[in-house]
Picture 1 (cartoon, rainbow, N blue to C red):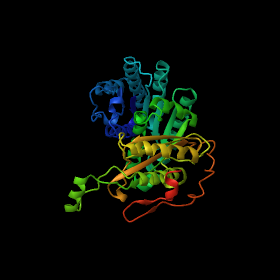
Picture 2 (cartoon, helix red, strand yellow):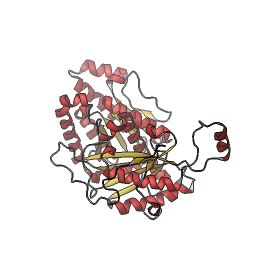
Picture 3 (tube, rainbow, N blue to C red):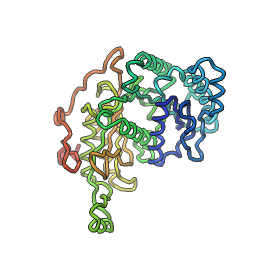
Picture 4 (cartoon, helix red, strand yellow):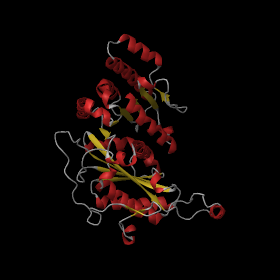
Length: 397
């Protein structure tokens, strides 16, 4: 996998993604990393050995700014330089599962269109995924036309088979307004990093390149909904239990309770499909279009509970939403500070998105589960969500 960023927002999203890859131990899957953000060149991301750095140098920036008449032309020239380095890096390997993830600031989408087209023309079999986010609230009034122009660029790239799709986050989404943009970017980065390594966790999960290619079926834009839930820690090691008796402030330790994790995961899946406060993107969710449900669970791969969890959740997701592809990966979900410390399960939904100012809007959610429609997640005093799933439903879907 190659990871690129263009512009200030692109750099920010890539930074969160790098942290998530490091947490999951997946930086070894990265072939090349870099991009263009003129405002941050003095503070580039530190890369581990073995990763090819394709970031523009200060000398390249100075040269481009001195030769070109406009910042836009200079940025386009610098982006082209990055693209050339990426092509050279990929020429060193013949990995059939190669992919490129591009984090783009919407304000520079037009400036990198040529670079993306050139990379795809020379790396025809490598799928390209674009990730972007809408601008901050105080910039929307000024940049509405720019945002629409950026969407037109991204749509053209999709229709020309240059990119597979664009995941579009919203800086003032319901999720961001409820939990903050840092939690939104952290949660999304964790989900995308998990998708990158998921095939190593379970053979039922698609390789990342295939996952990116499949997202093309959702259309030119893909939205995101996310939520996390605290799960019961399960039985703690004997020595740790003894330590807790003499230190009342010691945190819980355990592997996560299987029964409770399943209960919470089922409720999370229903919430990300139904509840508005889980949306990290604009637009409604149509369950009759392709969906992807990524679950992060706090079980080790050599723990039999991981397989048991996956074997229960996969048929539950498929039977509940016939167009959904379940992906189950190891790793605790993004902690919610309002729920205290401990183990978390996270659900992330990727869905076909038509931006609200587009030519049409997605149909309203249909065929909701009657047992959860209209219900809101409730919270116990210890921050543990009271799920609407009954005990009888846990192991039989």
